[in-house]
Image (cartoon, rainbow, N blue to C red; front, side):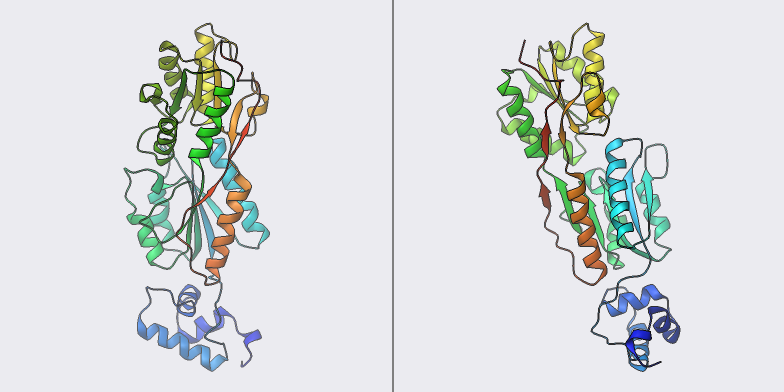
Length: 330
């Protein structure tokens, strides 16, 4: 065999006595391979006529790491990433991580024993400041390209693509102020999550008081608890950190005999597929899911072909979708 067109990674691997993943790491100058192994792969490439300066797409599948799929936002991102990878002929599989199932760290530990081309992490471990980044550091050190959606970290050599929390909060506050609201509250998840901290910083940056912020959980129950506290302190509008929180806020308002939006305006975040059909239809901030996923997948595909990932976080501007859950201040 002497022509490049006929030479495959499997041929090089067989000739060098190594795996196809090792061949890919050597040809793409990735770390984590002994020098004698590199020499063996180079010798096999020369013997088989494979050009050593040609990047080779890393073999294997892409793992899509995400939170629990019962969260419609996580499911939307995972589905879009799967669709984009499939359209490029890249096999992939989804690893959902939730409080009652397999954790993200456990998924990563299991995957280290397999040929893995790359990882797309959706709202993953870097977004939680109580979790160690060591599992991802080990993955990246093995030369596995990794991109993160809504979970940036300056401590990882990866690609980062996020929705702008500043833009989301600013557009929500501007909308409510245009309706005459001055008692505006913010309901978000725990302080350990970066999106919550970013939304809080943006809210306070607009001159709104810290006393108008309630940090509970990114769930319907968390939204209900937060809304109860904000209603009791005479807020007439609530900006929520997720659509699920917004639905909880509406439920709490109704349990108190209030009508949304006559007595209380509510704004969500995500624009999950069913939010146009709730009662009332929810005013919410729509994350640009497709644009974010296209950018993340494109960066990953370039990395699979040998182009280093840019560590600069890419921020995407969301859209405020005005429906019937907001109205002029009472």
